[in-house]
Image: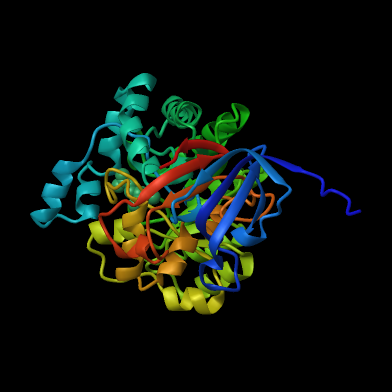
Length: 412
Ligand code: NIG
Ligand code: FE
C-alpha cells in the first residue's frame, strides 16, 4: 500500500500563467505554463504546472488566462509627496532657461518647498494620492518616497508622515527616505553650512526618534550641497544607523559615486557624470546604480549614464521614475522601462530586473523582487505574450492583475 502524500494547504494557487521569476540562469528566469502557490502572504511553491504536486490544496485557484506573472514592481526613488506643480518652469525652460538658472532665481526645488510648506498634512495627502493611484495602476507593490520639500523640522516630518499614511491607506509598502539635504531653504540663503548643522543636529535625530525615516539621502550638486557638506550628513546617518542613498553626479561630477560607496550606500542615483573610479568604488561597496531616464529625458540631458562601465564592473542597475515636479513629472514605471532601453540602451530584461530584483536591492528589501519560495507574494499579472513587451510598447498598460502580500487586489 502506498502511503497518502500529506496535503499542503495554501491560500491561493495561480495557474495558466507564465512566470518571469527573475532568477538568474535563463532569460527572465522564465517558466512557461507555470503555477505558483501562496500561503500566509508568501510564495510556498512555484514551477511548471505539470509538476504542481497533487497534494497542494488551495482555498482559491485563479486562472491567469495565459498572461505573464512578474514580481510586483518596485519604484525605488520617488519624490511622490509634494504640493503644487512646476508647469510654468517647463514653459520657462522651453524659452531657453536652464534648470540651474531657474533654481538660482529662487524657483526650482524651493518653489515646491513653498507650496509644500503651505499645505496641511491632509492637503498634502490628497495632492499625492492621484499620483500614487497612477503608479499602482502599473503594477507597483513597493515604493520609496523621499521628503525634501519641507527643509525645516516640522515640514520634513510632515512629509514623512504623509508618506507613511499613503502606505497605510493604499495597500502598498512604502519605504521613507529623509532628504532634508535637498536644497538650501530660503531662510538659510548664503548659510548652507548652518542649514547642514540643523539637518544633522535636529532633523535627522527627530526623524529617527519618531521612526519616520527608513534611510537618508542628499543632493550633491553645485546648486545643492558640496561633498564636504554631504559627508557631514552621512556621518550623522551612519552614527544613527540609517541606511544611506545619494543623488550623485547628475549634472556634474562632484565625486558623488565614490562618496556614496565610501559610506557603503545602498544606492547612488542618476550617475550621468560618474567617473570610472566612482563606478569601481560602487562595485566594491555593493552600491546599486539607480538610473532615472525620466529626469534625463525631461532635462534633455546629452550624456547618458555609463551603462557599459556599470555592467563591466558588475554594479547592479535599478530603474525608477524619480517622480517629482521639477525634473521627472511622471508616474509611469512602464514608460521608464522603455526609456531605459531607448535612451540608456539597457536590454528589456535588464530594465525589468531594474524594477524588480535590483530595485529591491536598492531598498535593502531582500524578501522581494524575485519569484522564489519564501519571498513575499507581491505579484503582477500582465496581458502580454513575451516579457520584453513591458519595455517595448510605450504608453500601453497591459496590467491585468495584482496580488499584494498574498491578497488579491485585482484579477481578470
Ligand atoms: O531627483 N536632483 C534633485 N532632485 C530631484 C529634482 C527635484 C526637483 O526639481 O523638484 C531629482 O531630479
Ligand atoms: Fe530624485
